[in-house]
Length: 486
Ligand SMILES: Cc1cc2nc3c(=O)[nH]c(=O)nc-3n(C[C@H](O)[C@H](O)[C@H](O)COP(=O)(O)OP(=O)(O)OC[C@H]3O[C@@H](n4cnc5c(N)ncnc54)[C@H](O)[C@@H]3O)c2cc1C
Image (cartoon, rainbow, N blue to C red):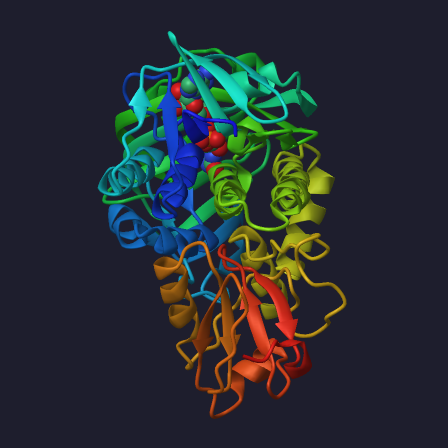
């Protein structure tokens, strides 16, 4: 028998490592989390927490605090040359949280760290991963002066990941880079504060505005390569706002910086016993605010799989492999979409800009398209169809691999969430009939469905059932004949 110092070592306590840590802690998986920084970062970085992430944070027990720390945002408005081109309401998404929250990444990290502490785990700070090796049974990590032998190691150590480096992997993609000026400031401005704004006016490049709590606002403006490295200042930010037709008076800077973004992804998320998640695995433009959200969802996808592996659940190798199968395409899609968005927003040609503006007005002018764009932004188009661990060949409104949707007026989402919180490592077997059924590894949830709304939404035939995974995605939709009788 191999003996381990800990089952899982999480390297990096940014938002992604913290989500994984909270998820492992509530599943009572023995693990350690280290970070080379002696103090948490004071850079506010990612400010948008999307609806899908709020659902996840609810299961982790911190959604209400995250909402309270920021501003609830119910729409995105696109502007050009003084005119509003499109408004995408976010409240059409199929979620108990039909909105985004804008809050500083420092707040998200603080809340997750406190939750972790409440679960009895401290981030080990000032501890840097120096080296790692692995064999068939274990991973050996050199951290500071110490050697840690663990069953699995997860690199959540950001864009310049040491874990990735030690695996001999590289971020592959486009390194032409886009440059941005960014400010977290207080501001007076005449824009709807319940929406995020993307302004792509003539000539000067796009600017994005994210109203935050109180007078605080995040402004991100694309800048030319020649300006990169120039010291960010309030005066420069003000000038950029003026040049791009944003009538805003900025003051009280909290964080001003310039930064460069690449679009790149690692080819493999799993190498033996080592996994990569978050910026260690993928980097992209801040357009759409997907970076941190995609990373946190990586962690949430991996948490229950690691728990299953540590518990020695039958078939856990396939389950672990499915982490790459399910999450790699998600970031690849985000990279594609954010590249299109950034290119679209930064077009220089007047003719192309006119065509773009008309196309945007037309496309985003229908409710169908607005719903589709909102779903995309809030990460509701993420699904794991074709994954080796979800059932294939079922076609209906809900397909295995979809996130289990709420059914309005039935209380289904809260009932499933309650089971997921109380029995974090189990799948949820939803049955619409009172006869007791049970499947190993599942907690059974018997729900009343007098009007057939749940059966209709999920395509459940009489006597059938639905199996929802610990991360809230549908694993199987079963007919009565497929359910073992007790
Ligand atoms: C200037 C800037 C602005 C951004 N703006 C946005 C935005 O508006 N919207 C958005 O969605 N995203 C934005 N991002 C990206 C977002 O911040 C990241 O996607 C997010 O932080 C990724 O989280 P992570 O946990 O993967 O990595 P990180 O947050 O980078 O955390 C990695 C952690 O690992 C630790 N670490 C690193 N190496 C080691 C080691 N060898 N040993 C131990 N610990 C180690 C680090 O100290 C750090 O705490 C921005 C990023 C930057 C830099």
